Image (cartoon, rainbow, N blue to C red; front, side, top):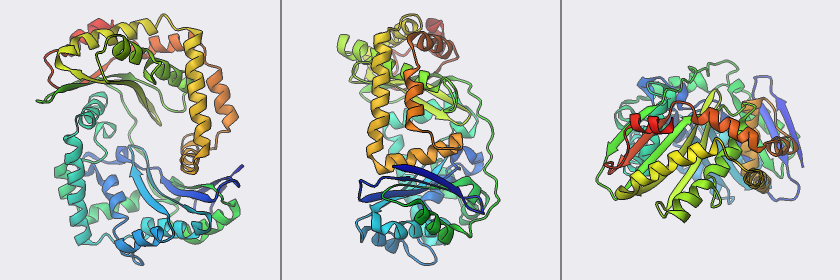
Length: 418
């Protein structure tokens, strides 16, 4: 196994993680542009652009794009987040050239056919409506908006039905020209791949990418607050969160351990107390959303209307306890879980490919596994309690959706949290 990186003359970064023991390779183009780069008027354009890239180029129509990769048994997909867009493929090692060619084609030569745009707008509107009909999706969008109100980071990745309906072909093309530039992209591959081969393919396929562009975005500003949405459904869906950390902060691994022991698995405090000891929930967990300049620490649970009040009281008690009482045994168990997760991910070519691109975006370099493991192992109980006091001492964000008669008001919850 070996990791290599290069930078092309136009600024495109090329990285490879060679695994001689596998017969496949994952390759993808990660672009440092997501929904937080959008103005309010074009919210959703990044995601719409990602969809439209698959709808035909100067060389291939939409059907050909799908058939060519699947004719060799490969898989082609994409996703959009708040900070990045990715186009990626997984295939047998001998088909790497085809995969790079298709990815390069769809991000450089898409024609944005007007009839395809009409159809894809309709598809995304169905996707938005589906998310709104799914309570645990909708409440997360409400939570994000409460944490970052009136900011791009608080707006939904998919945009709104109205905005998607109104987004023009010209607006998509202008956005792509402004943000799809070589210095803001990373071509990463992991699996049975030689770096010199990948670099040669990149030089051939991506040499015409513009070397200048603008991918800046406003700084995030965590605010916090409350969102309540009454719905006539069986369960209340609850989110309670606090300002977290950017992914490159020194305490990131301490925060990861805190999240793991607090609500990261079956042995976590929240699972044991809320589900095993009190039978209040089926599903409860804590999570981290980490961005380049900030982040969120959140807790999600869903429960019946009659159980809401007891659940929220339990959450407040557990938040208070973890700030003053954490054992070395808990920390060691959580560290072991994190290390296992990191090491198990090494068995997936796509996970390694994605991790490689993400590390270069955040840190400017690949991180050796030994370096990551060392930072996880350095976390102790005192550090976890110190950080818990800092995180949970901040302004909360509360989002609730469903039957809400038992949900405490934001002011009462804030008072109870101290």
